[in-house]
Image 1 (tube, rainbow, N blue to C red):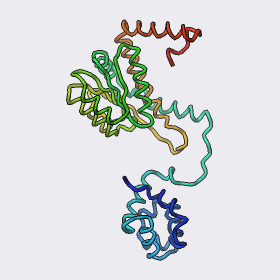
Image 2 (cartoon, rainbow, N blue to C red; image 1 turned 90 degrees about the vertical axis):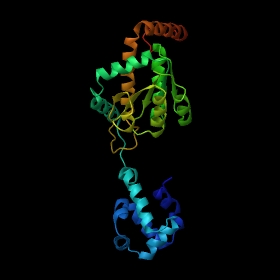
Image 3 (cartoon, one colour; image 1 turned 30 degrees about the horizontal axis):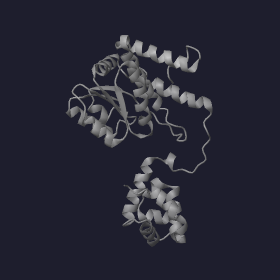
Length: 285
């Protein structure tokens, strides 16, 4: 694993020599400059000797200053908005809704009717549908996709554990379907499992941005994400994934409507018996 140099500096700051503390604080104040500047420039700006910079590198478990600068460059690449200590004003409630509207508007029309029809046909004809998604967003979305499909006469199971994804991918039959979910489009575990499934004749439907995962899919339902500088609000991009799942589920429901209508009726009947509420309550949510 790559050393998180910013965390290492912060955790050891109080244990450093005064001159080392001085250069460490300077580095934290301008990570990008420290990553790209020469040792002479850092020395001049921080007001310390070359030896202090060298000692700091060793105190941070780096082989030399060159390795320290490389790790600083990697941390700087994360983005200043995750490093800066400048106070941030909270977003008001309308701004949260606005961000959701903006990302949905950005994706409107991105998924073609032809792609949805092809994906729905594969799903309704499949003996089994596996749904793969890992991480804080796609794990939940894999469960959500399963919750949409089981009520539409589609036998499905969601998986988020990387080993279980590989294991289940190796058990598919020809013409089974794997639905791959990824907000980034770069998900090594999902991609590896999908390739295993393809080896045994399964079809792959990918809901993700253009990227590595999309290239191996038989059907790609594209989404695009847009991350703002305000880091303290959960990503609105997950609403795009949810919308894409709803688009696919709606097409499957219509294509499979004779069977899906009966399953939906059964669900509604028993939920209304249980809840004793209005017949317009959400169906099982």
